[in-house]
Image (cartoon, rainbow over all chains, first blue to last red; front, side, top):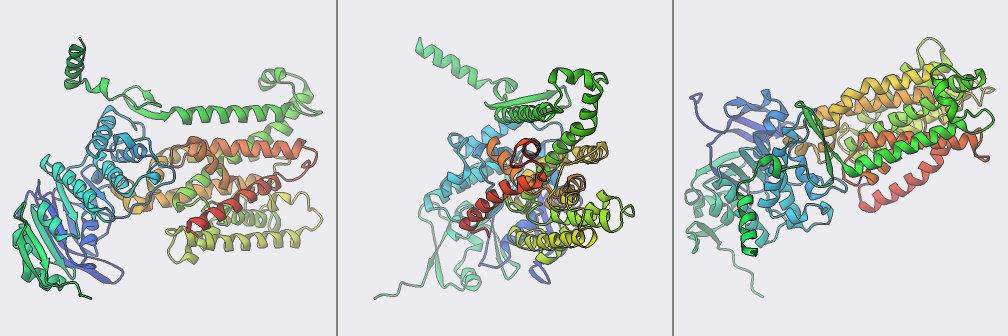
Length: 267
Length: 368
C-alpha cells in the first residue's frame, strides 16, 4: 500500500461526511496521469463528496488525499490551486461580473501580492476563452448568458487556472443534450492534450463513451472500477441502480449503452 | 496583393513574440513595479477614483473656505507651513482641520468596513450598520465614556462593543457567518438591542447634556481634535497592509466557499480576517465620530456601480465613503435647515431611503 506509485491523486482509506454520519467509507483510489476518470453512481452514493475531498474542498473525517504523493492537508490552498482545479456544481454568480473578469479570477493562484498581472495570464485567459468558444462573450455579464454559455464561462475560468488535474462535478447538469456533448468533447480534447480529468456524471452512456476508466460507487463505497465495458454491465446496473436493463454496444462507438426494461405504461 | 498581405499576416501569427502578443487587455493599464511586480488597473476604475478624489478635495476646500471664519485658499500653503494669520491658523488647526480629517478618515474606514462585510456575507444588506457592528460599537463607546469615564479608553470600549455585537450575531445564527439571510435578521435584532442600550445609558447618566451626547446616539463631527484624527488614521494605516493582501481573496470569496477554495483563496481564513478588519475599522470610526449610519451600507454599493466591473473595490469604497461624510458634514455646517444637526442624521435620512430600496430589491430577488 505504501509502495511508491506515480499516481497524480490518491485517496488512502478516505472516510468523508458531514457531521457524525460518514457518506464515504474508507475509499482507496489511485488516479494515474493522463486518465479520464468518470465516477458514476446513484444519487447520494457519495460521488460528489469524494470529488470535493479530492479537490481539497472537503476535509476528510479520516484518511488522506495525496496529490503527487503529498498530503493535501499539509499544503497551502494557493499551491494546490496551481496543480488542481475543480469546477463546482453550483457556484455563486457574483453581481455584475463579466465573462472575462470571471475567467481572470482563475489566475488568482498564479499571482503574488505585487505581481497580479503577467503576459502568461493573458495567454492563459485567451486560450481558455478560445477553447470554450466564449471569446465573443468576454465583455458580456455572466447573468445575461444562457445556461450553456454560462457553464462554458465557468469551464473557461478553471481552464485559465492552467492545472494538470481537472475535477468536474456534474458539469453537464441543466444543459440540453447538444450542449452536454459539446462540453464533453471539450473535456475529451483537454484530456488528449495531457490533462488528468476526473468527472462526476449522471448519464451512464456519456460516462462510458468518454471515460478511459469508470468508477461506480454505491452507498459510499467503490463497487466497480475499470474500463467502461467492464463496469457498465446489466448485472451491476441492476444491482447498484436497481434498474433491470440490457447493455448493448453503442452502434457508433461500441461503448456500453444501457437499455432499461421498464416500458412506458400504455394508456 | 491582397493574397500576399494575408500570407504575411499569417506568418506573423504563426510565430508570435509572446510579450508582444499578450499585452494587457484593452481598457486596462498595467502599473509596472520594476522587476518585482505588475498591477493591473482598469481605466474606468482609475478615472472614477480620480473623479471622486477630486470631489473630496473640492468639498474639503469648500469646508475650509466657506463662512465667516473661512480661510482663503491662497492662504492655505503658508498656513500649512506654519505662517499666516493667527485667526486663520486657529481655524485650520483647531476648528476645521481636525474635523475635516476625522470626517475623511471615518468615511474611508466605514466604506472599507462595509465593502468587506458585504463581500463576506455576499449581500449588500450584510453591512456593519445593518447587522449591529456600528450600534454595538456605539453602545460600547457610550459605556466607556459615560458610565466609567477614564477607566476604559473610548476606542477600546467601542472595539469591545463591536466585538460583542458580532459575537452575538455569530452565535444567534447557529451557523456562524455562512448564511447572509440569517446574519441580517440576527443583526437587525442585535442592532436594535445595542441602540436601546445606548439610549438607556445616555438617558440614565446625563439627561442635561443632550447635545454633547448626540455623538453617541447619531454620530457627530462637532468639536473633533487631533487625537480623534490620530485614532482613525492610525487604524486605517494599521489595516492597510492587511487590506492589500485581502482584496483578492475577498473578491473570490463572493463566489462561495468551494469556488474560492479551489481557486486558491482559503475561504474561512479570508472571512475571519475580513470580519476582524471590519470590526476594527467600524470601532475606530465609531469611537471618534459615533455610529454614523448607512455610510458603510451605501458607499461600497455606489463604488461598485461606478466601477462597473463586478466585485468589491476597497479603494473606491473608501473614496466614496470619505466623499459622503465630507458632503454630509458640509450640509450640517452650512445648509440652513441642516445647520447644527449631528452629521449622522443626514446620512441616516439619505441611507434610510436606500436601505428601503435594497430591502425591496432583495425581497423580490428572494434572498430574504
